[in-house]
Image (cartoon, rainbow, N blue to C red):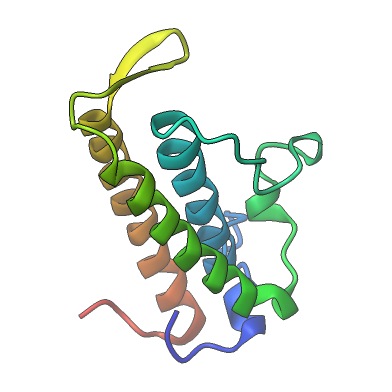
Length: 134
């Protein structure tokens, strides 16, 4: 995302996809909150985006003017997720869709989430301005 303006961050440069870099940033803030604060930490935190607007609202409702705030929200969620997880043992269990899920498995899930979306981000960035991962 470095060096791009807000309009570029919000653009959807791959015609066959609705993904944007800004949408990915918003999505990762949402999943950090859900997995670490809500599920693992048991915090009573509100959804980041109104569920009535659809499960993909984080990807769809993009306002370039919100780009700076989206990055600040992601950083704040990283800090809050770290604090929530720091209180727990790796074997701490929570129920996810009726199944036991350890904090360890939440980390594994999130590693996969970041890996997948970082790959998307590489392709989006290349389509925007030709920059490739180094």
